[in-house]
Image 1: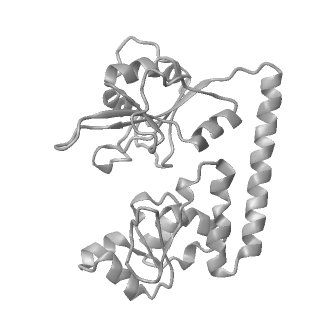
Image 2: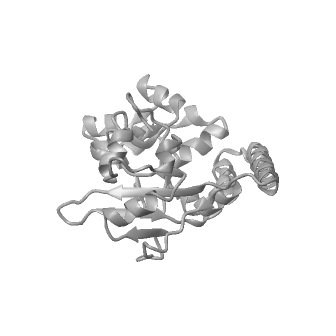
Length: 262
């Protein structure tokens, strides 16, 4: 799984990756390793005609980190589930670095990495709490997603409400949005479902900060822009959206748009 890549890099183990799927890897160092041919990529594997399992076996890898859904599973003894993305606390997610470290005898390094991460996290939370006590404003924040219609599904507009996101917003001094207008149709996915684009647009009008988690059409991250967001979420012309007026529309994929990007 690509999620584990960042944890391995924190331990100085990035160059030891034998093969990765670079589609979702945001690390410039790992992207460079793939580009230089030092680390094999899944794209190269499919081009060569070998399946992921075959390519992992050919690489001689002794550890294949997968997610809880089994993404990238080889069905062999080298598969190990790395489930940091299911942890519902911020520091809980960070602490998964200790799990990764155990396979490389890097426990001491992992303990230090986590200690430093926790110290920075707690320092920011304390500074924010102090600012709030002095009367600093608390912007309304929302993580939103749009999935376009397909042959088998209708279009969806969802609001993320995972516990770790709510914690992150609160610790950063924000106020999670009021999603009462969009019911929780599936308590297991931690997302509220808005009935239509109009319901989502009404929610967006109340937000000071928006984080867009949508997958760009065709995976075109480089071309995704503020204009793309406006089209996908069907924003109305002439309406003052606080998050747009304040230029506080963000994405979390660490990929930059070529023009007028978020």
